[in-house]
Image 1 (cartoon, one colour):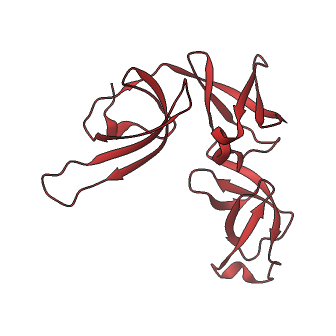
Image 2: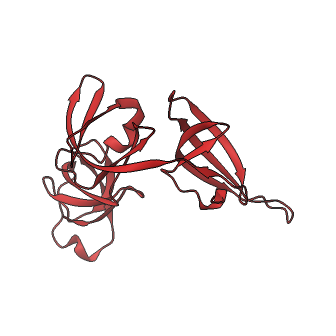
Length: 188
């Protein structure tokens, strides 16, 4: 059993007899000497989809839930449902738009390396690769000779994600975006 300080975003844990998927973790460090570091976790109940916020001390022991990861690709949109196809046995996994709204900013039909987290036979979350390639659809015109400066400008991707890119990047270019930090990494 890992400690609360070892739990990462995207983990499936058991708490109060239910299985939760950890969506966000924030670390709270009190200023006093005797205060213990707290980890506040925003979790979603796998069965009902309800949100729960819990705080754990750093050395609290937490049970990890049994889950599996399956490689998948984005297939199509069916109303408010997004359908992903298992890369090995072609099993479809449906997700409601609200459940994966944050991840959708990085997913296109060409996105490779997606993982579906499955708990008790049901898909609960999408795990993104560390970086994805996206195309810029809107940004200010590129400036020649701007590669020497470190100035940036906002750029909107095909998925609607807006990130800061260097001034020399132009519309229509593919760029590599870090999915955890939401930052430009390089040209694709």
